[in-house]
Image 1 (cartoon, one colour):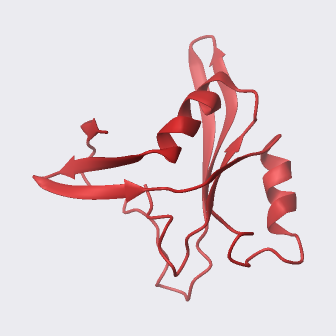
Image 2 (image 1 turned 135 degrees about the horizontal axis):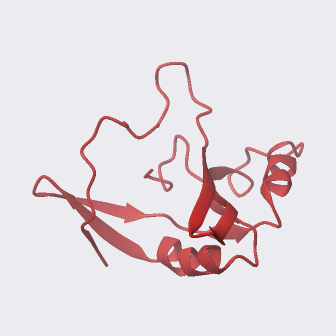
Image 3 (image 1 turned 90 degrees about the vertical axis):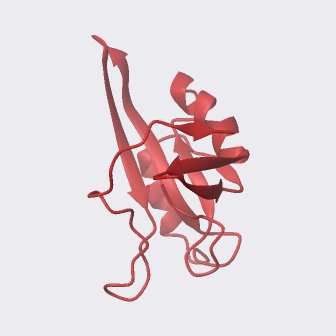
Length: 120
């Protein structure tokens, strides 16, 4: 997904809403270190600290704080569940911090082959 411990655009992982079943299951996953294997190459993922938010608006409010962007007051990425198992359908939002120079953003390529193999 994204290297959130990178100095250039790291930060906390935001998850919302804080009482959502899937979000509560994602929290320990993001708090642990794990490896992804893609095309026989191992990629370590260390996401670091997770912060739970009430909803997507609370994440917006956090990013508009005056001291947002300081080392302990910035977000790397966010996962926001909008619909959780309503008629067997799920809707979520993935948010990324892309506040770098133009054409230097740290955004995952959507053209990469999908992988389902994740080892902890």
